[in-house]
Length: 185
Image 1: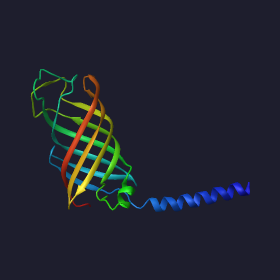
Image 2: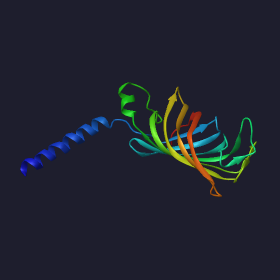
Image 3: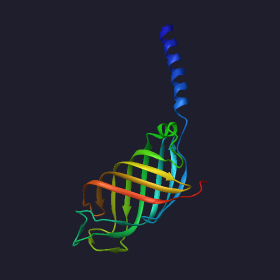
Image 4: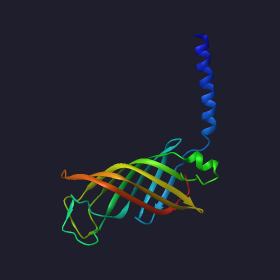
């Protein structure tokens, strides 16, 4: 029994020492202004390697097959949106060891994303409802370039639904954000 307890204690000490060596980088609070889909975003740390981001703006979106009709050609919906995303970064320490930028949460991540759109400002389709929602898992990257330029790209499947209960699965959702990181508070 004493050997067992001694082994556990040594194991815990070794693990905590190793964890301290590996835990040399973390996530940060960042305000952003995006201009591809104009909006503002706040990204807050929820853990050493995770963040929660919330964004509001007015942006372009396509039509979901079960939620729009009477459109042809290039389909567009320009509307206000709210975008929420929980991100788990998995390569911050690796990037740091290779002397790559990790500032402002520059890394690769997996996430759960929820986005909702409101009344259209402009559109070339008819929507089944003025509000729709979509959520699903994504894989993505975000990077800070130069002093404050920001790039985010993520992709994944999503389930979409409107306020009337119409919904389905969309196999590939793409997001591309370009913008600027503002001074952290």
